[in-house]
Every structure is written in C-alpha cells, then in structure tokens.
Amino acid sequence: MKQLDCILRLSNKFSRLPGVGAKTAQRYAYSVIDMTDEEVEDFCAALRDVKSQVKYCGKCGNFTDKDVCDICSRRDGGIICVVAYPKDVLALERVAGYRGVYHVLHGTLSPLEGRGPDSLRIKELLARLDGAEEVILATNTDVEGEATAMYLARLIKPMGVKVSRIAQGISMGSELEYADEVTLTKALDARTVL
Amino acid sequence: MKQLDCILRLSNKFSRLPGVGAKTAQRYAYSVIDMTDEEVEDFCAALRDVKSQVKYCGKCGNFTDKDVCDICSRRDGGIICVVAYPKDVLALERVAGYRGVYHVLHGTLSPLEGRGPDSLRIKELLARLDGAEEVILATNTDVEGEATAMYLARLIKPMGVKVSRIAQGISMGSELEYADEVTLTKALDARTVL
Image (cartoon, rainbow over all chains, first blue to last red; front, side, top):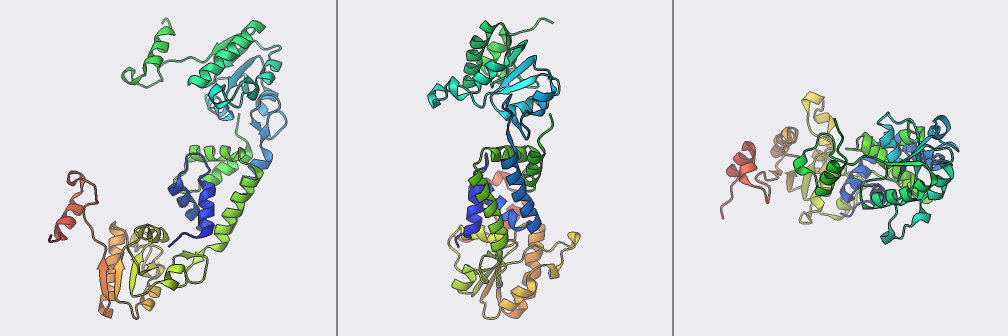
C-alpha cells in the first residue's frame, strides 16, 4: 500500500521543521487526523499569524510585532549585547540578570560560505554606538562566532567604546576529564583570583 | 522579555503533536518565521487536506480517501490480519510479504480505562468472516494487545475460521542476555525444528 497523497504532502511540510526526519514527520501527519476541525483551523491561523505579525525590530533586529521591540523601547541603551540570532536573545533573557539592550547580527562571518561583513547587521550596530558605554560580544564560541567577535572588537575598540566578550571556560556541573583542550586552555588563561 | 503572543500561540499548537515538548515546539514556531508566505500557505492547505480528505475505510477501518480503501478493493479477503491502529497497517505493509487484507480495531481491550468489546470494531470484523480462511491476530504483544487477541480467538474459533497469532520470541539482532524472562519463555515454547 502506498500512503495517501495528502498525508505524504503534510509529512513533507512537517519534515521542513528543524530536526524533524521522515518518520517523525509521518507521525505528526497522522496525529493531525485525530484533531478536531476547529483545532486544525486554529493551527492554520496560528501559522499565518506568526508569518504575518512577526517582523524585525528596526533598532536591534530581534523579532517583534511592533516597529521597535519592547526591549529597545524600554531599556537603557548604554550596554549593547551583540548576538548572532534572535534565539540567542531568548536564551540570554531567560537568565534575567541582564538589563541592557541587544543587537542581532542575523548570522556570523563565514568566508567559506560567502558571508562577509556586509551580509550581517554591522552597519546598524555601528550607527547605535553613539552614547553606548559597552558592547558585549555574545556570539557563539565556535570558529565562526569567535571570528565574528574578533572582527567586531577590532572595528569598535578604536571608536572609544569598551568591548567585552562573554567568558569561556568549563560549563557548570561538567567534569574536567571530559573538557576539550581548547576549553581547558581558555579556562586556565581566564582563571579568577578567589 | 516575554515572548510574542503569536509565537506562544503557535508553540502551543506544535506542542500538541506527539512527543513534542515546550522547547521543541518553540523551535518549530521560530522556524516558521523563516518560511516564505507561500510555504506557510502550503502548510495550511496540507493540514486542511488531511483533515478533510482522510476518512475510515468502510470495510477495514484503515485510513483512506475513498469509501473503500485500496487494499480492501484490490486484494483477496481470504486472510484477514487484525491490528489495533492504522499505523500498524503501515508497519506491516513495509514488509511487503503479506498479500491479504487488514482489519483495524481502533484500540485494544482495557477494562481499567473502560474500553470494552463494544468500543472496538469487533462487530464489523465478525461481519467480514464469511468466506475467510484465516484471521491473523497482530495486536501488540503488551498486556492489552494479548488480552484483545485472546478475546478475539475465543470469539472466532467456534465459527470455524482458522485463528493465528503473530510469533513471539527474540527480536532479530538482539542478544539473549538482554531478553526479558517472558520473551525467553515464549521463544523456548515456540521453538522450531530445523
């Protein structure tokens, strides 16, 4: 028996979601059959709403449904935390300690994949630096994130703004035995006096 | 920052899919932002199609978009394989060897959860037995599946139809060391002469 066309089509749509393989997508598609008509309509409406209402904040580039996002309009712009993607803002906001604003680059430098400085929101960042005290570089600690941070540091430092990088070291709760050499080296170099 | 309402709403919808938790649902919702308008419309259309086109086969109870499914209308009804859910039909069809028809019960007996024989498609099964040579009971090998198979066997045997149960034993490629006692006992009892 071949599968029903409509189920195959829906499976294909589900498999476009991040991390969803063919089997999971099929499982999702079958579960839709058990939903009520109303649930399916609500699902469609929610999909459309996200697509039509979500846009980028004109200042920081984070997702918002207004012209300027809540963070940019309410918080002091003295400290700007630079991240690669909107999801990184979410992760940092979960920590609750930070009270400054963000700047979303929408990517990292990657010469191999043809992403140079012009493809990131770097111009917009430089335009915001007037009056800023500190720029915290919070791109990922992988090769591309590191390269992007180094590039931005060299660009911003001469403008007289303090530039910092999030600390690198051993994760909380993890064991030295399993830490890689680069992380261990960074953790030793950045040791703090107690 | 609290999350955007529309993203929260969509996350809630995604978390209704089987095995999707809050974090995965949120990841799915964010990925929708990166889809094109057309992709979102296609997604909605696919959801609606599945809901509106998929119905149950009048004979076997499997999913179909016709009145009688392809399997029932094309294959010989001499051998009927009884399964609990439509997804079990899919699993058995993947094996390619079976050429008979199916009967989907849409559940298993479960006195504890108030599912008696009347809640399953047993009447419909009995109505199909005229002219059948064999009924293969392929419900799961868990307690409820076993109970359902035993119940059906007692019901159908007196009607002069051969009743069989899928074999139980050690899974292919697995090690005796890790097999549970019940499986080992079944595997010994059902040993085959070489």
